[in-house]
Amino acid sequence: MSIKSIEKRKTPIFLYGLTIFLAAVLFVSMFFPDSKIPLDRLRRDWLGAKEPGGTTEEMEKLCTKNLVPPQPQESRHDDFAMMVQKAATDDKRVILTEVNEAFAAPNSMLDLFLESFHNGEDNITHHLEHLIIVAMDQKAFEKCKSVHHYCYLHEDLGSDLSSENLFMSKPYIDLVWTKVRLWQLILEQGYSFLFTDIDVMWFRDPFRHISLYADLTIATDRFFGNPEDHGNNPNTGMVYAQPTRKNIEVIKYWIEARQRFPTTNEQTVYDKIKYELASKFDLKIQYVSTEYWGNFCQLHKDFTKLATFHPCCVIGLKMKIAQIKNMTEEWKMFKSNNLKS
Image (cartoon, rainbow, N blue to C red):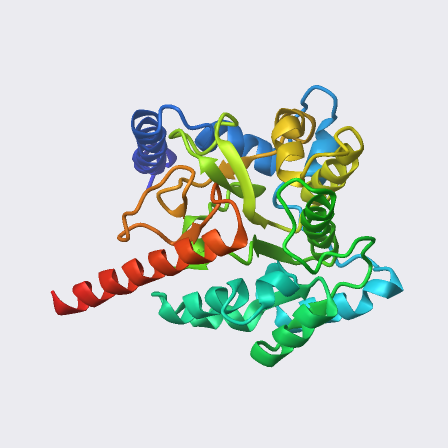
């Protein structure tokens, strides 16, 4: 057999491969015209990119896929680090929430929160095996231990955070900032986390709505159609992050930004610096639609889509509890009707 005949047989195979590749690019361009994921994101994620303010090598170190090994922790955080290791899934992921005495009282948010897993679909009760509840005071800690197995008492606090704190009061601001520091500790250990406020009710598995391309995934108060658009109104009551060098630096920068806005909660500070984060760190952020991670700010009550529901834009603990109980009853009725049909 001549060399020419072999080459003739090889040529169609090459053309077939090229044709498939071009067809894939055309498909992506037609059906995802506004998406930055297919080409630009793949280039940056896998090869690094020489962006303004950073070399290719620096960007590679902050690359989404560049997971960090566990970092040494301060001895005062040893107990928390050990609990993260015990609670984590096989792929090193934990779920985190916080509770104080007011929200841990009988028939208050802690009970409703845990009950929602048992009322949910997708067998979401298994997520409780990987849930760490951080208690902000001794009474909340005692209540937590009576109903759950992974409870951590946060003792390094400068304020009394046990009572219901008025929105944007100093104790409230101190309370919400504690979670950001805990996020940093988890990431530095090499674990990913999904943070959920204690007043978020779980109906289905929220992980189904987290995209792997994103560095951070954040809930929204109001969602305007594009999950990459920083014009969406963020809500840090649900946040997911992977343990990357980039994310650790992002969290540090976020915490440091508090000094610029000392009377502001972590969510408002994030909203003020989100464009800085995207530019400085090449941060890829996914904002989740309120159709899936719902709330009262932009109400969507389509139970065929809702995975979680957060009573934000409702003021006062009593009112939040009342609204959550109403929503839970509607969810149970929806499930019951589905079983009958």
